[in-house]
Image (tube, rainbow over all chains, first blue to last red; front, side, top):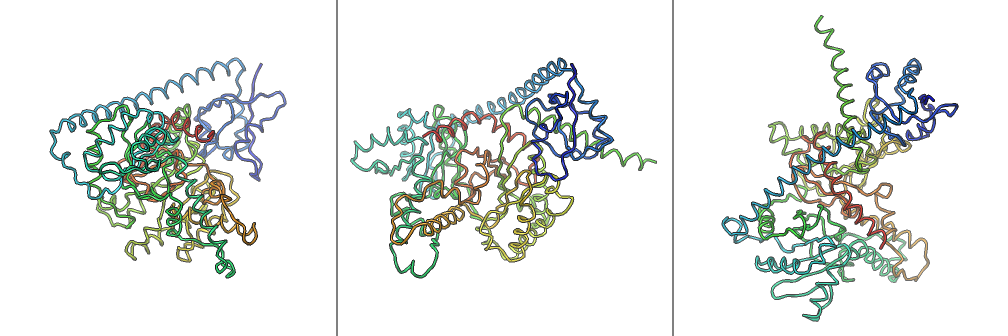
Length: 324
Length: 276
């Protein structure tokens, strides 16, 4: 049984998106084109084949610009796509295997490079941890008023690691720390510890020399929504503003003040360290992240003093233009 | 004789290069592909300094780099590309520089609307995000004209952030949500949690796009500089250590490969967040 896919140019009014194209293959004894084989001869015949279409179903080996098809090419196109069903099935499996193999190969290269970088970093961090490199001792952290740490929620369950990190930061004289995790694990674990120790609120705690603030996803976007509600609430109650006929137009400083009023205000961290598998801030409060340097520290399981010192040292050397 | 044989060659070479590119993209497509990539095009001035050319020319080269990166993105099947062209903070620069950047922007917007441009090649839809009223009149009207002109295009989307900061975008969304709330309700009513996160998200400039999968900032800087702070909750942040005009296909491919490595983790976190 032969399966023939005949391509017809799309209607001139391109109301249908290009992804509808496969659906347009006529059904009179023809089957869907399952494998698109790219024929170099077609390139010369059909002119510019610049755009790429996403084909639904099947495998793509090459791509097609339907607008490049001229009527004289249809015969050639039919030739290219005439495959028997059996052949089509086999060739699509082989193609999948080849593509998959190449993809895994590419990722092997990426992983190898990643491994080399990781080992390099580990080596340097170990050297720094021994205290041999003078420049990483006595860090000058005048620029750092507040340090934020984003931890992956699963890794945040390991409380001993978090406490160790806090003690390291305390020894480096970091005065203000904001801890964040997506699901509020830190609030539940460390936060509760602090609460029992010092009888203060869950979110903020003053340790011996350090202030530690603990946040989660609900302190971000939801905090801003609450600030909006606070602002409009005040506006509605203020008759003078409303009678003027002016539409509510708030300013950034009003939003900041509103956030403070409802208890969602905190200092903007200058540096944010991400402990997790990926460099991603995972929903840290957007209003506070404007000019924050975001550094990926790797997984919390592999945390070490050396990489922390290195990150802080690199930060101390940074210069920001703030847009200028 | 020699000249005649040289002319058809570049076209064939181009075709072969395009074919190889498509093979490469087919291999990449075996894994998860990003649908939305955002670029912070940093390092044009430093590139100009490095290559010892005029500072303004750095931005010109940057634009060429942008067009080729866009081409590769759209060939790969990326549906949305967002670029940080000009921040509200950039108005603080020297007036001559701001003036020349504005002039460049107008020139490039007009260029994008020409027949042979990438907009027509891919049927791009153009969006301009930001406080456009802060822009000088000629650029603002060029931007609005471009948006109207491409409004009905069904191809991939290019969003250009001019006179944009994320906090300003959030502020405008708050103002729009509050104005809508005021219209809907009567006097003396108490909002108390009537404005939700979803209301704000509907009123952001980026309401019609999905969230970015990757945010790439060139020149090795590690901050977002007030760009897409709300939308980048689960975006993979990347900081390749090269200037924007040097960003090429191999950097883009590396970027996608890095994204594919962390995709399972980010997707799992995104799903967790949606469920709770």
